[in-house]
Image (cartoon, rainbow, N blue to C red; front, side, top):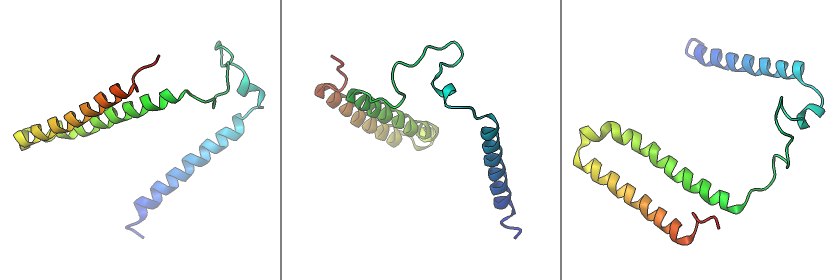
Length: 115
């Protein structure tokens, strides 16, 4: 039991947090009329919140995610590049070259064109 005490304590804290949020929701929940009204001085919505987006937004989102993940790989690389040396620099330039090839391909296919 002693080994699992921290795990049980975390589960208890999580359950208490979920219970507190649920009780707060029950206490502060109001009718559906407030969900369609503009918040404070905001403008009323012109379309439904789950309306469809143009398909070009998905291509741009995927390109953004690709370069966002690139930065996830560059942070640990920056930490160890001084220890590893030249091979790490060469590997990063190969990686960046592959990403640049992807950008050129997307550019040639018109994924970055809005008109």
